[in-house]
Length: 172
Image (cartoon, rainbow, N blue to C red; front, side, top):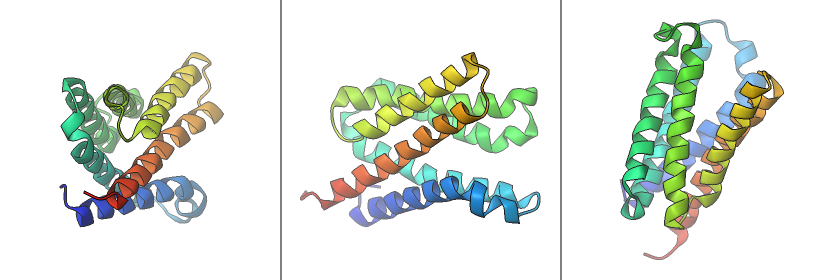
């Protein structure tokens, strides 16, 4: 996936996915009846998946084993999020799935920070999302704090996409 046009396309797809995720609760979801919002969720996650794959592609040379574990957990979490409506883990399926995704991103982020390369802001935002989410859990706040955690998570993808576009502007 190292070709410049493919990475550029992945970065743009990630930005589009993040924008849809931010705007959909206000613009898209109120206009849709069930089950159509689920299609929007799938589209968002596929677009963010392009970002995950592009970041892995660009950071792969400097990545250690921790990055692979985090990357794998993140992909597993993303797949569990998409199947959470099947209630595999009962009523808490979505919470468990999104936690696996977030933990995977944090494990990977630790390696991204260790490598001291690109994606440091994205890594920091993904770590902040988990910390904020855990604070909300401890405080039993499932409203405003959860939204702040989600925004940090999505802004991590925006930062990753911006880093991808910056990397493409640099001479090879």
